[in-house]
Image (cartoon, rainbow, N blue to C red; front, top):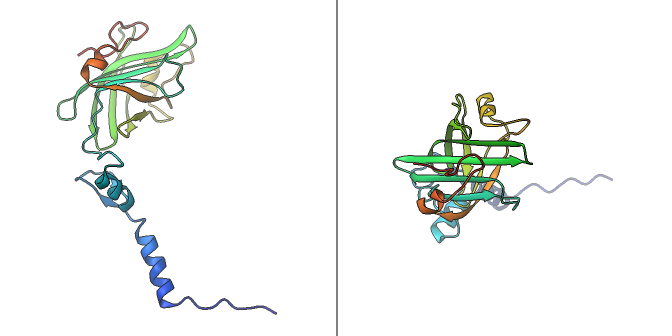
Length: 184
């Protein structure tokens, strides 16, 4: 014998609506990136960094902990940043470049224009995610970014953790071919 499910009562329907409403998106701090109410509450409580208060300036290292990959940024949110990136794949294959970046909320727009060997790089502009502690490059980058790399190396999917914030830390970052990875 088949049983029918009891109809959902008004209070249960209201509870489901409220639960789903908690998953809606709002805007925090005038940021163009959507923030859930839970994230907004965490920002208000100081558990999460406000996307408008985070700063990209600093020295970063790869999240795998090998210490051979680096990213650095010097400057500020208002004027923009001078950036440098170095990613190694063994002794001969590497990516190394310098350029500029802007930061809007948790989105860093990075434009690389010079390789570690001094060659011009064009068409290498992409958005990366920065949460105040970690920077994650997208898994797919424009073809122009290959000019910053040798062999079969790629910047795609690289991720870095903030090691030390500030311009002084960024100024100390070193690359393979570039003595000062973050000039500017």
